[in-house]
Amino acid sequence: MLPALGFYKPDWIIVVDNNSSDETREVASAAGAFVVHEAQRGYGRACWRGFQTACKLGAEILVFMDGDGSDDPADLHLMLTPLVSGSADLVMGSRVGSRSERGAVPPQARLGNWLVSRYLSLFYGISLHDIGSFRAIRTSILQHLCMEEMTSGWPVEMLTKTARLGYQIAEIDIHYRHRSHGRSKVTGTFTGSLKAAYHMIRTTFRYTRFRRTYV
Image (cartoon, rainbow, N blue to C red; front, side, top):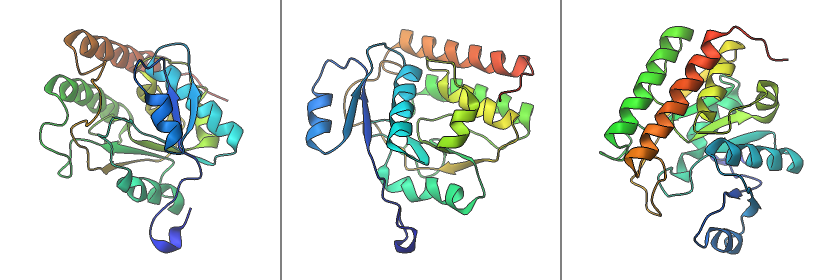
């Protein structure tokens, strides 16, 4: 990291190949990324594999983002500044602010994310408008959360447990764009959108219904 220069340089770029059928592994490796394979499908499963790899490498801060060109790496300084300054423990990138491209988030995804984020905002008294893919959190805190959800509900579980344990959450408007590569298995199809919405809503009620403590 180089905060004195006004930006942050990641020590490692980890790409999780979750049984892709294209040339993701080859392209990422050629670009210098640390590529790991996850045999089991599932968004949370891929995040978990990336998290395990980052821990082995000794990472102190983790940044999750999609690799389809929709999340802008130039926003890294916006996401990391609250963590480095100590004003937040988890930073969520919002795709529905003024910095995002119009129409980049499909209507069905926008509605589902609004419902879940609105519910969590009311339940925990936090300011939240979206549950996107661009997130930053300290490794030690994510370890404390004891993550279990290996589906599209992973971000919801992370957010819910962080709020429940009293950690500070910040939301930052990011420059979200239309994806430039591939087709989304989630928002690209009606069935995929319904499945993702189901997992997000199910995870929301699962972790807000029962008052459990994570140690």
